[in-house]
Length: 248
Image (cartoon, rainbow, N blue to C red; front, side, top):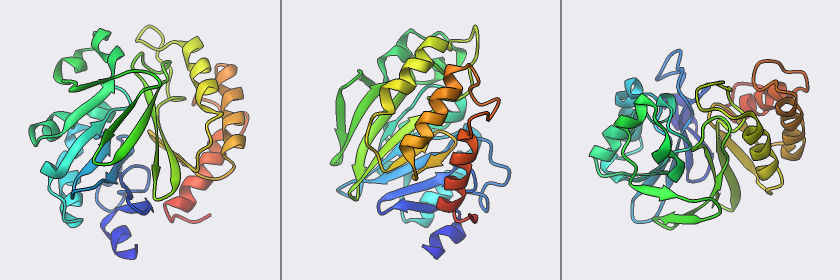
């Protein structure tokens, strides 16, 4: 574990790695501004990745994979939480190495300029599962931040993990965000029993029902990530720092 941390990699649970994110790659990617990039070990010496971050960080991600003895060609599937450049900017590179991009079918109807460079290989539907290398993801369509936003639920080393993307992230009026959908999406997933939430830019693994209650109240009042009136930002900052070994 200490050796991985020295490389800027954090194993959140056995078989689940944080390659990039707040504090996760501080040694390898100073002042990192992209999303959390997660790596999941499957069977047959193959791996899945949840999001890829900005394209500008791809070379460093490849170096981090190499430190684990993994070549990009061993990434079989990229599960995209939504098609924003900070989440899927590096996707084309990994697709060129053989990975398939799985993303919600609503991405097809978006007209963002970035989507011209994103080629979905697997179109996902709400409440449907997909499997790769013995890792099964349950898909939850959670629009609001974007029309194609998704959460993925899976079990890794006996832990139920929810990859939440930017379900309660920034709200962009006139750019595809929908306030009512964001509120409904939070209500949709908050009842799921999970041990760890791997967000697009954050992590939570303690008092998850309490976190969702705080977050639901913030989103319900239209606060999003701008004001921490109910303490949800403090909640996830504290648990995130502990998970990342930054104190707390």
